[in-house]
Length: 141
Image (tube, rainbow, N blue to C red; front, side, top):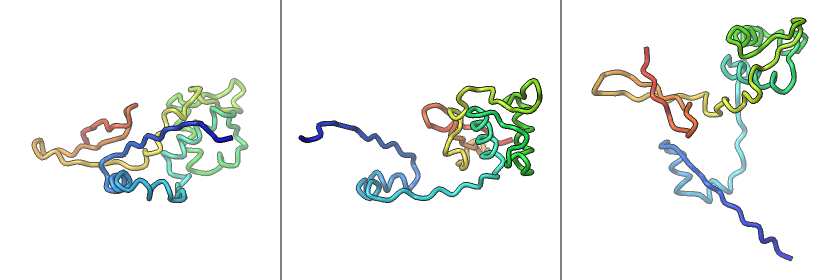
């Protein structure tokens, strides 16, 4: 007969105007089609995170089409130098040191917020890095 399953939806937003708008106009948010995400895959930070995640899925090899790209080669070198990627004994494959590096990828990592501390006259850079989704303040410089 009928479907008696229940579900819950919990939405949490920041202080930005768009998030506040959608919290006040929930039907507008829920009835919209998903937006297309536009990401520059050659952005060094994004590329490095994706390569580390890819290496956790399958080993990366030197003949990967992407590995010949300038930015990818630099990102792979940095990941290996920092120990995030490990080279096989024969030197032909790269593996992720972490089993699940995707847990450390923040989809909001492309943007940072800045706030002026008027008492100390310093700028603080807020990065969305803690496990509760809140910002950690980091002093510039």
